[in-house]
Image (cartoon, rainbow, N blue to C red; front, side):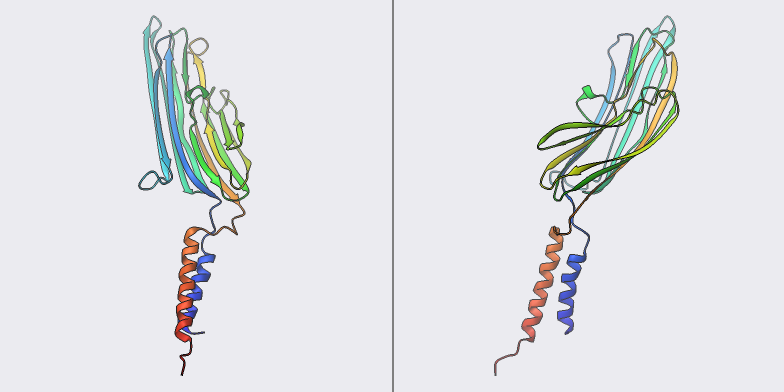
Length: 270
C-alpha cells in the first residue's frame, strides 16, 4: 500500500480507536457549604458559600470547585462565656463528564456552653433549599450512576454523619437514597456504594446533602466532634455506537486524505 494511503487509513483507524464516547452531556454542577450557630434565643450566626459552573456559559476550566463556611456564636451569661464554633469545607472535582469526586476534609464543631439554656449548631439542612454537591447532565446511553462513599467520624460526633443522595430526572420526582445516619457519639468509619439506573435521552440531577445538626446547652455543656468524608462517582453506559465529535473530525480527515491519495494514483487518460 502506498505510504500516503497508509497514513490516511491510519488517521481513520486512530479516530475510532480514540478514547470512548462520553455516556453523558454535562449541564452544570455546584458545591455549597453552610454553617450555623445559635445560643439562648439570640439571632443565629450563619455563613455560607456557593460555587457553580455551567457548560458553555463560563470561560476557563470548571473541573474544580471549593466552598467553605465558618461561624462563631458567642454569648456571655451567668455561667460564663459560651461559644459555638462550626466549620465546613467541601471540594469537588470532575475528571470528565463521566467521573469525579467530592471530598469533605473537615466538617465539625466545638461547643462550650456551661451557662446557656439552649442553642443550636448545624451545617447544611433541608430547609436551606440547597445540596452540598450537585451534578446535572443528560444521559446519551443507557447505563448507571455509581457512587462509593467513605465516611469517618471523630470524637463527640453526635449529629454528624447523615448523608443522602438525591436523584431526580425530567420525568420523575426527586427520590432520596439514604447513605448514612447519625454517628451518635462513637468514632465511626462507614463505607458503602449505591448504583442508580440511567436511561438514554433523559436529563438528571444527582445531589449529595449532609443534613447535620444538634441542640446544645440543655444536655451537653462541652463537646467537640468532626467528620471527614470522600465520595467517588462514575457513570457507565453502552457508548460504543456513539462516537464523539472529535472522533468524527479525525475520521473525516482520514477519509479526506484517503480520497486525495486515491486521486493521485488514478491513471491518466492516454
